[in-house]
Image 1 (cartoon, rainbow, N blue to C red):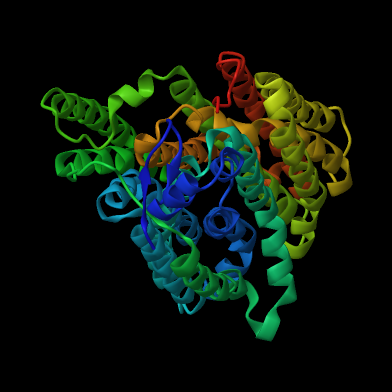
Image 2: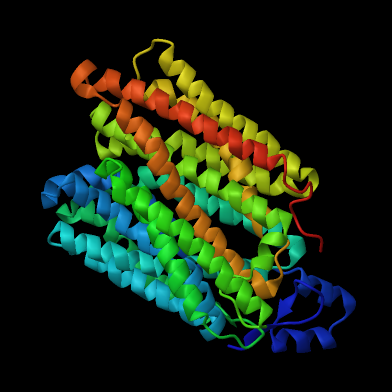
Length: 501
């Protein structure tokens, strides 16, 4: 495979072979090649993205079965979720720089291999401790894979076609997010060969092997056009800052918000301040900062990152609350709880396609409509549950669908809003920051909304069903507040979220 290097107008990257063929082709052929999307490459990397995002959510529905089979404590179960999120969030940005240094293809393949091997370890885990350790390595594999996906889209896809590819990317992420509960329920319900919850990890193995082989053939070698060095002080300080931020967000609720949680937050703020000072110093000396701070000078990028934080805060937290409501409140099986998500997952898929096709014509207006519908869906759920009816799956499915209609219209194009104006040479680090924002937003949402939800869920006082209905209503109102913040950010975005060709 020949390395992909920048060439031609801004945003166009092609291999030497393609460049040679363009020189001998006519203007029409050159234009056609310039507008072509390498769909085989994009399909392979998006499949890896689907697998990584799915494993953030599929375990939620498997928690009761894991707890019963491994005799795990509540803290163990939380760390089975947290170990993946923590290693994923902390290592993402470093992984993007490693890709700049050693090539995106090499790091992507390493991520797929590590993720697949860790999935085998998860499926074979004899106890909670080994499963937690395997999940940490699975998160490292995801951190190596996911940023390369966004970078490949930014580098390989012409600017004129990027909105449609980001639309597909958003569909993949949203379907994995919302459909994770459904897929997990179906897999556990199938119980193939008596595998039970272990099937949610075994399913990654054949997929990972096929992806590795396809990536060897169809994913090109790309990297930074300039020679760069690894900013080790930046790596260490940023990793510390992220660890001190994400750990208390994940564990604070379970631990009862003790003093060490607030000490971690204070230490994280100090570490982030030191990181900014280190990066500014490197930029002044003409060095290679881990994260060029000039990237945040772009309004679309800086506002888009805040929007992603808000959107993923509400997605992660709400579907965790819904899963607990269905399984612990209404005592539904994993399969039954998963089926509750089916109509919403379908609506998200359909309206993500609508968004990808209407963004080129209507621009930011699509996000604005989606953000309003999304917030209205959460508000409608809360008002419906406090108006008196006893919570049932059929009661909440219509408002879940309404939320997914809005989510499909805003979450899918939000990714394009973040990365649309990023230069190809900054694609890697911008993708890493975006991926980190997704994970940190999820952890922040689970911490904040989780505290509200579990603080309101008191089955001993009023019974499981009534307690679940009340807690889910309170969570809906809390998420509505986050959705309103997201909507306000949408209205501040540049009016043309897609880049010009």
